Image 1: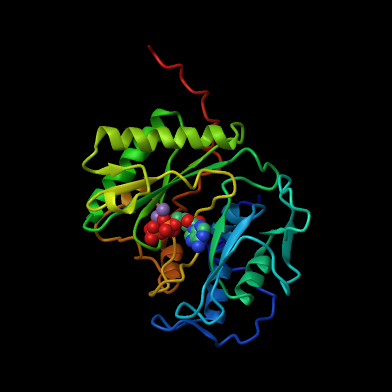
Image 2: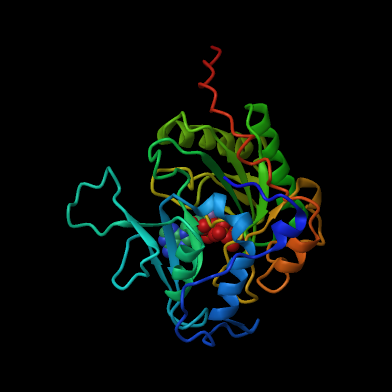
Length: 307
Ligand code: ATP
Ligand code: MN
Ligand code: MN
């Protein structure tokens, strides 16, 4: 991967070449963001976002009439996709007639998705070079009603602690919705079931250590005043929203990678948007996730239970 040389180089957006039809179509009426505005946003963030979306299967939330219209969560290719979008076949798919999955290799692919009214991008935690061995753990912190932001920050710090105790690096991003996501890079060694078991053990131990604060099962009724430690992203075929992806929700919020010391009451889960992200990136001294890939460690084999 090419490393940007200077800050000025980093700030420069690559040219996009894919032609947009209806560039003035409004996708976020409240924020005034159009299809062309979205394409410009993705060209701006491409250098930061690319490592997290290139070369992996993508689930996509399509909203042909913008966020106020119908929404389609699509895991498979559909007719009329832009030629820059890559179709990939899941090696474990048994149904020969199943539509292929979707991937992209470059900015043209991403703009091809914008052309198809894709407003959210949700990658797998493994790549198409290594389908069965995830290179990413996603811990999704979902606050129930009545949970304050400080408590969500504390939950993220606790997940971070448990990941680092296990020898992994942990990074944090806003979801662009209601919560935070703690993300850990993995050397792709362990397979999906082992990674899922590892993340379940973290969620279960947080819930049993602090039953007043955390739950690890998705039963909605049990969630009031508590935070769901949603580890279920960490299964084959499941996805989590990509860093820098927009959300199909009012305000045109995006999922924003942060440095841990940026977590504060001043930055809520939907603080960063299509509109203010270019300013943030231009002002950054360094990418808070620049070490993400070099920090990847293999999941240690499970410790034998003392008995
Ligand atoms: P929030 O902070 O509001 O929870 P989030 O992105 O974490 O934002 P969740 O509702 O927790 O949203 O969803 C977790 C993940 O489930 C999403 O990131 C996405 O990858 C996946 N997902 C979303 N919609 C669907 C859907 N319709 N079908 C299957 N999976 C979905
Ligand atoms: Mn969530
Ligand atoms: Mn969730």
